[in-house]
Image (cartoon, helix red, strand yellow):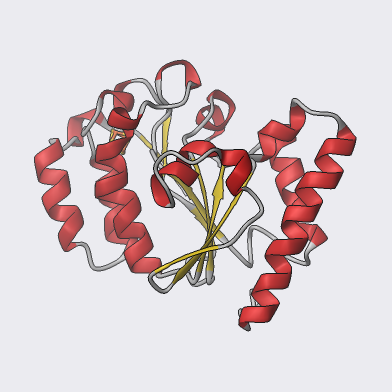
Length: 215
Ligand code: SF4
């Protein structure tokens, strides 16, 4: 869900972090996100995009940040990248409305829609994303692209070496794959072979673990 920024009600970084730690629900956390002025990104974005989907789903997808197109409409994964994402989900009998929750490392669009640097994303991750994960408690986290993968799984390993493989940290399973937008830069055969294969591996493991995305 996206919320328009509201500078007059803004809260400092320290105040937001303290209140976020105490948040008891996703709704409380989203309201804090709406008021957050914890980094310069809030002054540049049209919407804060907190998260979308079924918050009771056992599967969470995490991308890096809102793109310019996403910032303009306040939704996650739109236009061609969104169509590819929906197609890949449908290929394994799932939809973003029913079977997953999707969010991002940072909730506001960085300058010009570029990727945030690690230092720039740290506050948002530590304040909002980690609490979102704690409140939703997904069994599986799918990381879309290199920054979510490096941030949540391992520090410096090459994305290509990690994509399409499973990792278990604590009680949570992690599955890194490419961001759907990356398939727009490749050829259709690449998209079909790699994207569909990753989602096939993803779904097969869910079945093996007894995780029902429709439950
Ligand atoms: S990106 Fe995150 S930390 Fe920065 S202003 Fe937006 S909600 Fe706050």
